[in-house]
Length: 71
Image 1 (cartoon, helix red, strand yellow):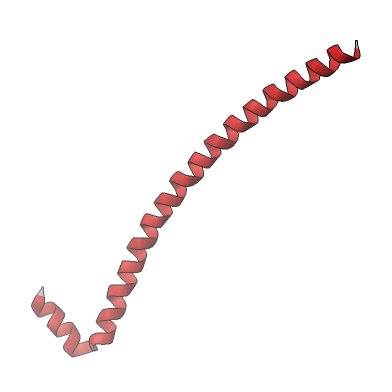
Image 2 (tube, rainbow, N blue to C red):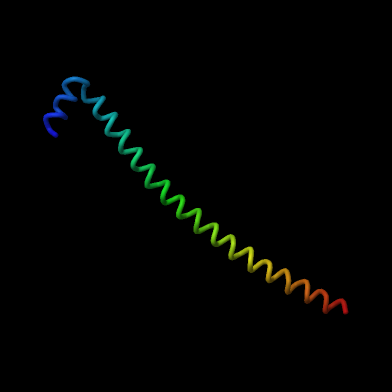
């Protein structure tokens, strides 16, 4: 590994090696962030579904109360 790294540095220069390292690091970091974002979005979707169901129940109760108050 060290020999390959030394050969790369001699042939391409330190900046090329650093560029490749940073590129790979950024790609891996973005993959992890994408996974976190997907889990967050799934959590928010579940929350929205729960809130929608609860709002539906509240609307039903509200309609019943308004109906009884009118009678």
